[in-house]
Image 1: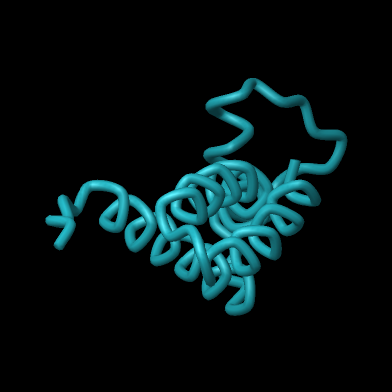
Image 2: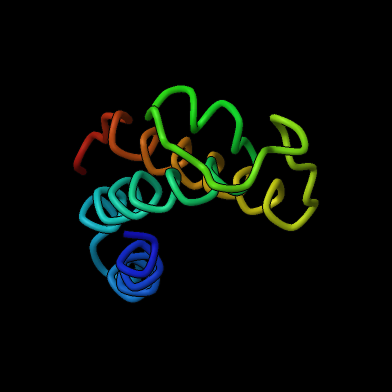
Length: 94
């Protein structure tokens, strides 16, 4: 799913030049597709509890403080917020 999310991010960048609302929908979909992978990387204990996953290796902790993954999740949240805000703003055509 995350592979398709990155493809959609790239497609959204290309579409954003001309069609802002369509790019916003693409960015929303890409953010939602990438979120499960990064939530599994950063929050493995809570992810296992929610989805009842069986792990052969015991968890060291419920939260993995990997700075790059946390920054990526933060950028996904920012992209989600900005694209949702772009969709909800009513523009008056001139």
